[in-house]
Image 1 (cartoon, rainbow, N blue to C red):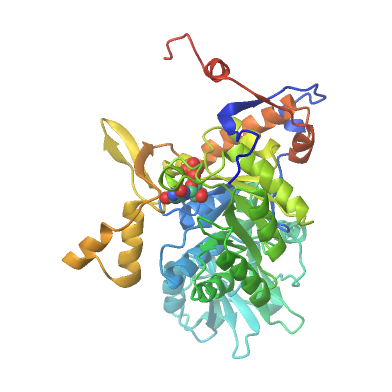
Image 2: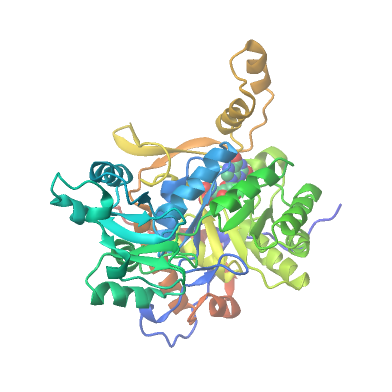
Amino acid sequence: MNIRPTKGLTFDDVLLVPRRSAIASRQDVEVATRFTASIQLQTPVLSANMDTVTESRMAIAMARAGGIGILHRFMTIEQQAREVKTVKRAQGFIIEHPYNVKADTTVERARALMDQYKVGALMVMDENGKLIGLVSQRDLMLAPSTLGSVREAMTPRAKLITAAPGVSVAQARELLYKHRIEKLPVLDSHDKLIGLITSRDLIKLDQYPRITTDVKGRLRVGAAIGVTSNEVERAAALLEAGADALILDIAHGHADHCIDMIQRLKRGFPEAQIIAGNVASRAGARDLADAGADAVKVGIGPGSICTTRIVTGFGVPQLTAIMDSLAGVREAGRDIPLIADGGIRTAGDMVKALAAGAESVMIGSLFAGCEEAPGSPVLRDGKKVKVVRGMASLGATMNRRISESGAGESAEDQEDWSKVVPEGVEAVVPYRGNVSEILHQMVGGLRSGLSYGGAHNIRELQEKAEFIEITPAGIRESGSHDVNRT
Ligand code: XMP
């Protein structure tokens, strides 16, 4: 047994000391960051893989705002893969497998298909997957009822403007504009259809300047998995569906089974980005980094709905956990980012977490009240609220067991529930509107924070950061005080 000579510190224990700054405007700083060793984000924020926080709707909103959502894993493999696909299909630069018909399809059927798929055009293909034309809603709008098939209504291949597979966003934009068209089929040298670029998708890209996209212009998304052996099957299905990163979601990540799983995933899916956690110590981060993780997630018990520290006595105050974990990753000789997970309530907390060495933060409860989080708001005492629950809370654990085993009905099962030892709670949080608004405030706070720190970017903030420990009087002074808030 030993007691560390230094105290463990968390966000409220410290402030950052302001530094001389050459930054004239908050717009002169850069908040882009690394999510994993090879994936960048324009906004250093992740939404947590909790069933009251991130499903596809939240993940779409997070990616559009420049962050990324991590889909929770408390659903079947098929459901989770479907959620990944929903995010990947929300928008894209090149639509793969655009809807298509054969030339002898009737006009009526083509109209019905466009309605059903909610698309403005169908590709017309021959038996060998070669494009022979394109038929749009406009082509069919005034088509006489005597027209027999799509062949007679379509714009034939010879008259179509098309692009080659390597076309860039700028080139596609120019072609669409120059020819005043809305669809640009992408063909290989044998006229085989590779995909479709639409003006609508390019306009969407402009709408979200910070957007997190993959090389195909699709939104990026992460997905959580567990460590049991059937989770390798889940990993394969999620990657096949297009997940950009897998997050090993384990309460105590500094464990042999977590390390084994990282190695297994890295062997089985060498291209996949694997995030591992959670840890809160130098040795924990070092061992996950050594095992091949592409990012390490830090946080044992700082979360708003966590009771791990109360139930087990284990945990490390989050700021110290981040600093120690950074030392661990460096000890492993790996240049991979840390994700600070849990306990972030304000932009200031985020700035401190980043200054301490994290490159992004994961947020649960603060986002659970958002419109995009699963579940509807309810009225409590006349105020709109939404539910949030720890994934190790009694309710979440019961739900999980029921869905995994179909249990829950009999008296025996009831008895079983009493044996659950929860490490989290269920609660309500105020309804907070759209997540993009919260992110806007947080990024604004971060930009300001960088300028107080005399830093042009997060890396510089970390290099220059000087923390000062404060007293309870300092904490009191930090909030608004001695006024009646309206
Ligand atoms: P915040 O503070 O943002 O924290 O709500 C979210 C993080 O909390 C963790 N989490 C839990 N930790 N028991 C725990 O000890 C739980 O039941 C639980 N559920 C979530 C998780 O790391 C999440 O990202």
